[in-house]
Picture 1 (cartoon, helix red, strand yellow):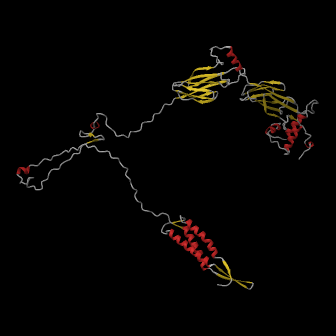
Picture 2 (tube, helix red, strand yellow):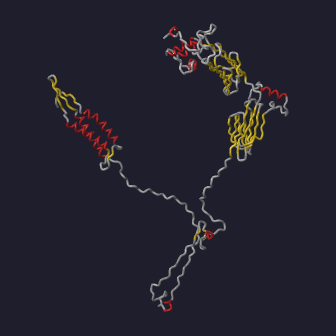
Picture 3 (cartoon, one colour):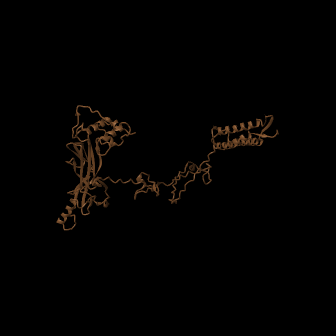
Length: 517
């Protein structure tokens, strides 16, 4: 839908700060132009420039009115920021009235509602050295800081991206960024060691490596070419060598070079990463040497506590215990009769011989009659010690005894299935119905009699299938067991009944015949 310009205008301006009529020499639009030498304008915003054409005029007023009427909504975030003149978070006719007031000269510049923001990104190898707004040079701060000059603020982030923002001073505005090549005037080296000491460091000054041991004009020429940017780093002639000695009880675990962490090798080894070589000697002293990458270099050694080596406890011995040389069983408290047989302390078997008992007390052992002296004489009991010979028992390999599992009596588990019983009873009921129901009928229609009967062969087949189902039930079910709902044979019963259903249906159908049979 196209809206005529007359639908938007005129506006009625109210307020004590608004003059009765504009000056005669007032401009009717605000303009903004930007440029960047050796860089790019990556973002810009001008309050009131809703159409993003670099000019604040009646086109921007109409854009806000169409947005307010929902004819052409403003969706872009920067366009919405540009349209919100009073900063209340909404785009409405009040914002359009402010733009029209400036275009008609009712509001004079500078005015706090009309601001701008321009962001510049330098090309690679360049940095912002100058910013000019309407011919006025602004101060460029260091990276990560900002500075305000008059109505303008210049901010430089850590990557060198520069932002200028402030209040529009005139109807014609120009912002120019000057990005020049980065030139350093010195190469720096800082070193530190956590729990250690830097014992030596060298930053190469004899950069042409002429080997004369003197700093000559040739060396100075190389240094001048590097520090003025004629030679770009990294340069193979610019090297560094730093040696670190950990404190007692510490060892070098890693090295941070220009904010990049590298793991240190083990003692007596070296590792090369990027353009640096990290070496740890047998005493634990660590050295970093290589080609420097930038004008600002920092090397930090990280020394950690040496952890003691934990030795695992020895496993208990399973070998046969043998006595120490010269040691006897009596040293361990055994009686004198015990001795060491190579395996343990043992004692020989003592055999006690019982006395001889005379079966005929009236005669002696020779068969003669016992005299009074022999009768009173009792032979002494003699304990005979039979020394068992020390025999060497041959080692017999023990065979693992095979233990056969005891036979467990079979226990019949499970039970009879209720589902199988229901299927069987249902099939029997269907078969009985087929047998007792009428098998013939006749119907009279238009004085003509028609005869119908059921197919007896289907009926016989249905009865046979039912009998089969009954047989399967009693073969697979033991009604003496507890009742369960389903078992392994339920699937077979279901298959049989599914097969029987079409037979039952065919057996119950009427078929017309010519005469009663």
